[in-house]
Image (cartoon, rainbow, N blue to C red; front, top):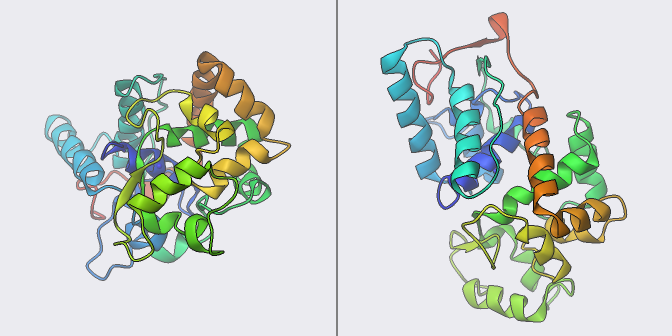
Length: 273
């Protein structure tokens, strides 16, 4: 939430940005000179600039070949699918025909994206409100098997109580502290998956059992009664995870889809027509 490496981080996140009030409508792509668009929200500061640039270039190429036909929202959905596949993950059929949104506000983001310290019940409520079940939530969280996060997003687990969160593996906590000391530049980034950071696989779930979840919200999935069965199932069966992830991405792609006068097909992904 794309290529994590530099793009995926944004675009699994870009896909999960469907949770934001406007839905799956590429509102996160809008650039604002006054820094008040959706992409300017604090929760979206980890989105990689290369990811935005890649989508803009892809849209420009499509627009040159068939102007006014393919929306930025569809380009974003296709990019998310392709980068997962290119990272050794699954592929799926993307439902097309979305329109691009007409609104992009930073204020719409707060409280509508899964946060790094969210408890399982809060995340479940967020997903449930968008028609997604616990199994979908756990499967989509598996996107953290690739990508990175800035130190500021998880530093509380290391220093908030004067000691590292006890749910972290001690050796992993030391590794994170070395990368992110208390006075470090908060824009420094760390891999979400310390074992296979550039491969889309099921190691994320095995990592949770070993105390290697970067976010408290990740680790909480392993500890939560409702989510743990899915975590353990995906950890032991990568095919099961891939099938669940594909199903969840299709469901996620249906959240907040615009039609008729509610949207448009932008000529430039970064600006309304």
